[in-house]
Each structure stands twice: as structure tokens, then as C-alpha cells.
Amino acid sequence: MEKELVCINCPMGCRLTVTMEGSEVRAVTGNICPKGEQYARQEAVEPLRVLTSLMRIEGRQAPISVKTSRPVPKRQLFDCVHAVFAHRAAVPVHVGDVIIKDVCGTGADIIATQEVLE
Image 1 (cartoon, helix red, strand yellow):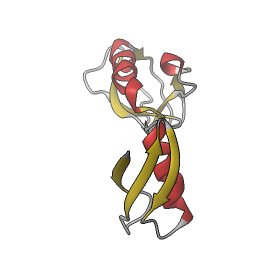
Image 2 (cartoon, rainbow, N blue to C red):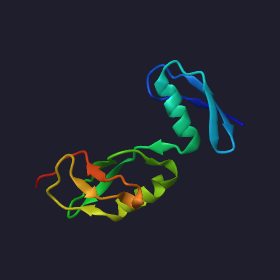
Image 3 (cartoon, rainbow, N blue to C red):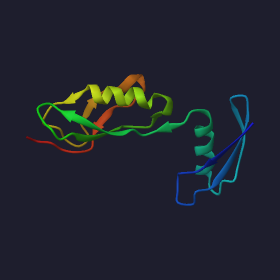
Image 4 (cartoon, one colour):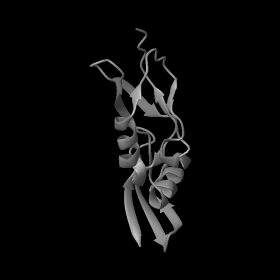
């Protein structure tokens, strides 16, 4: 089986072809740099994404922006979003503060990317 992907690691946007045998990657072609091969191997087996979202703050109308500390499995993104929406951050919030530890068992934390001091 073959999968066609476009690499998103750099502006080149290489068109990659991943040859699979069952759930194992046999070959990657079309990449110009090693990052393309690494991306294709990961994307073909278990796609990962960094989640960026907004989170409510206790007693405030305006939300703050948050993100995962590392990429999480794409299949768990909606579970992570639901966890973020169910949680309310407490003021003060500083950039880099861990707001939810190990969200949905992914090993990634939800961290603040915005400050709210008062």
C-alpha cells in the first residue's frame, strides 16, 4: 500500500510517497532532506499535532490562548479539546504556566501562551 503526503517541515513542501507493508513503513521517496523522511515515517504510522486552543478564565469573559507542550496523537485531539473546554484557569496566569498536566494521558501538558495578571 502507498500513501501520498506533503511534508510540512519546511517551505519546500516535498511530495512524499510512503510504501507500507501492513503497519510498517518500508520506504519513503520524494523527500529532499532527512526531515522529510522522518516526518513521513511518523505521519504514516501515528500522526501527531500540537493543539492550540482557547481556555476560559474564572470570572472573566475573555479567554486565554493555550497549547500542548508537545505534539499529541491526532486521534486524541478532540478528547484534549474537550478537556481544555471543561477546565477554567485561575488568575494569575503567566506564559509557560502548566494549566493541565498530562492532558488525556498523552504525556503533554496544556500550557499558557498568554499572560493574565489581574
